[in-house]
Figure 1 (cartoon, helix red, strand yellow):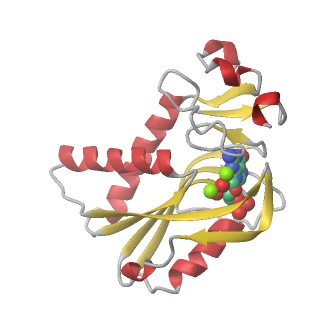
Figure 2: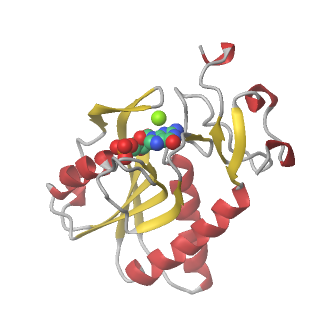
Length: 206
Ligand code: 5GP
Ligand code: MG
Ligand code: MG
């Protein structure tokens, strides 16, 4: 969508090319994913494992949607929420070495139903590495929810169990997704939540 259909923060306007997925569409899709997750996992206790940093907004909204659905259907779905931090990107390039932080207490996942929540899957390398890591703690079941999946020819072909949207091979920001820590704040309700950015370099970003 053209940028001028939306209100974006002035300090980011120059860097954005378009609004790729408006906030309301993300929220509708998230509600639907929550419904699918409830249908599959509604009878289990789950441990939600949020992949930081980019996953925080999607995870918070998804957990909210699950809670609302539970209330409306008089169900209880005991949920623990835990966090893990993964880092593989430098600027807008995926790098080979992946850092995992916060994995010290993953032993709590042993025998549990685990829902990993990640904002975006690009080549799939990050998620494959994380899955190997989590599997080592012998959870009962692992499911992965990914809000965005990129169509990349060089990818591993990995697909999460729950996919929000498939997107073309462009770099997107907003809704907690960053470019060198900027643009995470492109996520208020009156601004585009996920957008492709246009210029990599501006004075502000240096
Ligand atoms: P993968 O290992 O699948 O290639 O990369 C996944 C990670 O790269 C994501 O967790 C995210 O941190 C980062 N990433 C991939 N594509 C994008 C993008 O378009 N925008 C942003 N902000 N991060 C991305
Ligand atoms: Mg990430
Ligand atoms: Mg990042």
